[in-house]
Image (cartoon, rainbow, N blue to C red):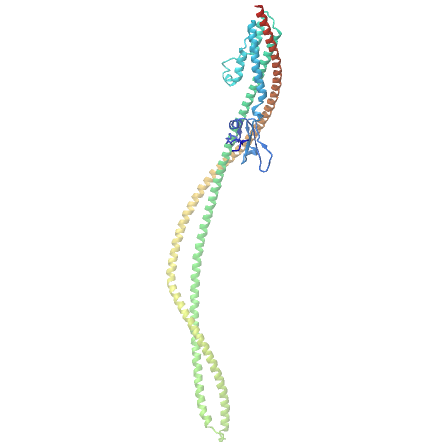
Length: 517
């Protein structure tokens, strides 16, 4: 086992509650950490300490917010302003106790020598200063005797008795007067400090009342803002209803346009049907003409073929030896050539006729197919037209019903919209009146807020001035009291010397008296 030469002792962290102004009271900190004299913290990355601002009663948040910092207290320094000056206070209390002891000793000596001085006013005065709250509450019923008056009465009584005061008694009497005057000055200073604290509390109370009225004014402004939002929402609903009415009217116009378009389509379909019928008749006539042309060409071909058949046996039968028939043959040859030419022409015409026939056949087939399609389409159109009237009648009836329903709905919507518009107009008038009153109230509230702000700034300025003045007065009074305490200490020292000399004289007197006895 190794011997322990040191021990690490720590102080546990304590959670301290804030007051109403988000500050930490000095009494709360003293309760949590007895003997502490201040607070400090460190910023991240900054080794330097930063002290927390203290206004004489409580610690204020640095920068207006505590944030997430670690705060520390300074222990065992005993140098904070809230603790006052314990050295002077202790020396003053010790000097007072020593002075009382000296006074009691002198009183005993005077009693032995035959003198009697009433010092009850000093104890009454001390009790009065130690319990000033109780005495202030019962000041109306209890009268505190004036120590200076008592001293004057005692000195006057001694003068009337025909006995002069010794220098020691006169000095003691002067010291009593000085001590009593000092106590009176301290009491007056304390009363003045209590009055200043009371005025500060009244100013803080007025400031809180002004802040409460300011909050109420802000609440009224927010209420008026909400009312303005409601008015704007109602105006938006009115615009939406107007937009709905315009859409319904547009839909009604579109329905009328659709009915007109359907009627125009029906007229166009009838005209197209008439045109298709005319085209069908034209195709029939053209087919008839082509059929007649084909039949004529076929008959011409047959006639030419018959003529050729008749000329061939004649040409074969004709011989060259027959000179008589040469002109006839030549004529026949010329005629044959002409016939050949005619045949060629006929063949060409036949081929052309065949081509034309083929074209006519193809055209006929196309026309036939087209005719079939047209017939089918015509039949479809006839079937459709057979039901068009019924459909149109149904459509017209349906459109009439829908139009009537739409008209009824439109009337209802129009009536509802008109009623809603009237109600909205009434609401708008009401809201306008509310808005005007709200505007007036808002202006009044703004004026009051500005006045309250000005008054709050004035109160803050006055409180700061009073605080500064109070601090200056207190510092000046503390300085005066320190000087007076120093003087009192010197006087007490002198008094101690006098008392010691007086005690020595008293001892010598006792010895002389004992020797005489």
